Length: 406
Image (cartoon, rainbow, N blue to C red; front, top):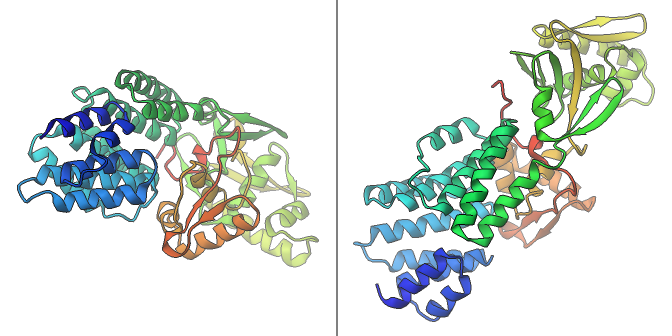
């Protein structure tokens, strides 16, 4: 490898992107194409960077399998950053295996981090944790250790483990400063802000307050029955009842939870749950049916009893009943949560991450665009959607993932 390539590689490792382009900007050999592609990717031109890296992968000879594998890893990273979640994970796994076979443990660990981050984005927390357990961060350089700790923090946030997340971010900050890469330090700082902004709203005893992630974790402590409107579940000490696919039942549970310890009249329930301007006998009859279904679903956790004017929710073991609501109420809150990361998403990537049909996601995006909450760029398959983050709020609880008791 000639001196210019070596100097460009060192500049890239130090985060000096312009230094890379000065040294190899006019060369078209495979190593120069690869280094230029990575530098341009870090400058934000993902389309051009991907083309350069694919050209570099083709230019490397048959004996340069490690170099080709590194190009595959770089292309996979571009796909992840540009939220192209449809890229084949098998290609990245094969590249990682090739790097491990030839002893390139640093780039193999980076490939593993990319696999885990993709799993985290689409809400596969158990798989992400198993993959993370196979990594030992101790021998990794500072930049890779910072990335490892960011992944640990991301999983902890989804698990509502604020102390674990804060400790991981502290370690990531130290490693990022050791690496001396400004972009990495900025990423750690951005992740740290999530823990210092409201993550949810607590509705209890007729009052409402915003909670940080640590405070949300405290709400899940034993002794409290939580009607979680962020994930549409009802949670007791050791039991979790999901009503994510039963919107009417969850609406009833939330309304009764907000009214606790008092009851809620039949007319008020019917108007709220069925969105009727005036509750008539048909609404009351349907309400009786749905209340019976709710009783059956919540039997392990609570009872729903009839009163003179309506119904009341009573926990079997918990001393308190609270409702945990998203920081921002919107019927398309899950879509907003993904777009709030500031990245550009395709509708197909959003559908994959949400576990919804592309048509459902497209309808949601169109509604949000009409309301001025999101904007799009490009056309056809190149169309990307993005939104500015909601100022002052974190959307961690809106993203898919399991609760601490899962």
